[in-house]
Image 1 (spheres, rainbow, N blue to C red):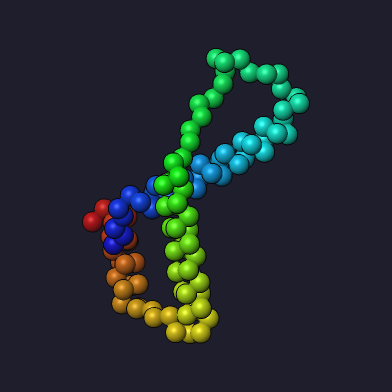
Image 2: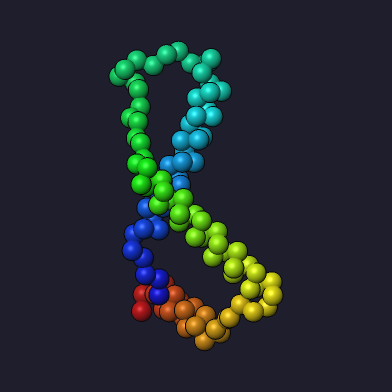
Length: 101
């Protein structure tokens, strides 16, 4: 069972917004010479992310990277613990949920 506190979705949203902003900047730079200036009515809304939110995002990224590296290392060394019972129970639970049981 997956328990979420909403923080993960927040971080995904922040990262998605970063990617969209980067894409928009790249697109705007390449299309700047081909498009006429926009009027104030056509301008888009600008959203800024607080410094605290940025720090939270960066600390979460660091934690994920460190955790991922430790898991990769354990898998490569053959020391990553795998519970066949947990895996099979989860698979059966998902199948039951998909069937509506």
